[in-house]
Length: 156
Image (cartoon, rainbow, N blue to C red; front, side):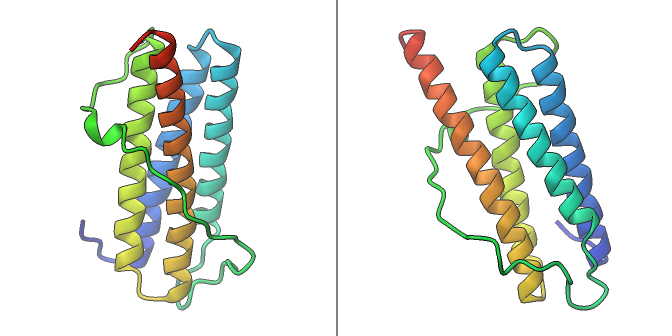
């Protein structure tokens, strides 16, 4: 992925966060299970926070967002989504398929932010993308656990 400016990278990431939040909001609106609806709305809220973080980033020189208060920690990966194929979103999809789509979206977001982190020139910018990597990895792990629980309930 090649970008002509740092601003183009940030704008692209903002666009992806808006898409993710919209997806989770729509999925929540179509979900009958209250627990799952709440989870999707929570994910949408977090994606909006990521959007805000990126929109308020000034990288004309050294990025000015302060990241020293953020606690970096390792997030495990069950790698369920790595074994799944992409499917297209459709209204009225099964819960299983919604989870599959959401897992793949988080997997792609994690990969994107890792690539952007590697392309970043400043340590602060690297840390911003590292924060976003950690957040997306946390979403992915949560979805993979939900998927495992659901499949166990279905006897699979």
